[in-house]
Length: 124
Image 1 (cartoon, rainbow, N blue to C red):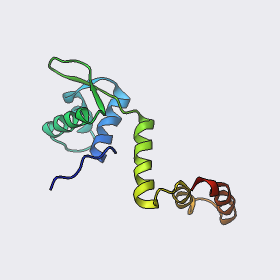
Image 2 (tube, one colour):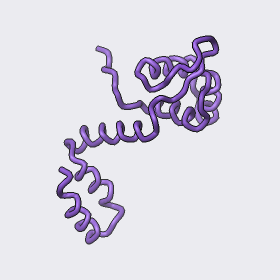
Image 3 (tube, rainbow, N blue to C red):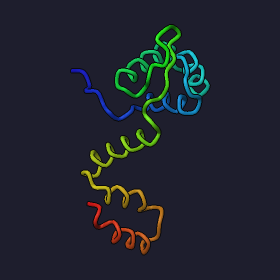
Image 4 (cartoon, helix red, strand yellow):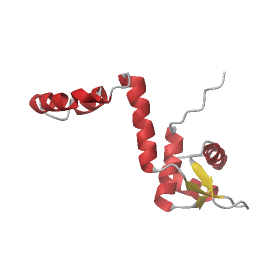
């Protein structure tokens, strides 16, 4: 059984998005060249992923002739919101309050955390 399409970007998709957010409109070859600076990945893998991302609406096709040029349609804020919403729903039962408290639990004093928890009571 095939895995259902996720509206949340996968780690590989986020890597491609980071390249496009930083560099702008690029070809598959140019995205691949940036990615191999950090890890080994096949050109065909990048091409397939970018086509899937275009089909999902994360990337826009800028040129209709070869070499195809792509731009990020999904913004950084849009990707962050999608990922946080996914984590909030899957790990914290939809509670923003629980997500924030968990994130802050090891980073602030107990007194400050108690104050923050009181402030977050209305978030659900």
